[in-house]
Image: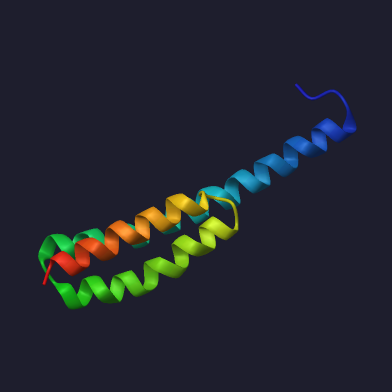
Amino acid sequence: MANTTSAKKATRKIARRTAINKTRRSRVRTFVRKVEEALASGNKAAAQEAFKAVEPELMRAASKGVIHKNTASRKVSRLVSRIKALA
């Protein structure tokens, strides 16, 4: 358990940041899942619409430090290549 006042404050800050990061990560996963479902159904138009929503969400998560920049770029790249393959 934290002893000093500063350590207690640090614990509170960490808990707050963890909660925020958790919601952001969850939000990204939801958007990615919508693209996955559209790809599974074979609906290219729906997949493209879902992709337009997921790309800024992934980049936002990367800029906030929730996920690494390269991870976000890799996910975007793989999703767009799967959408192109659907043609």
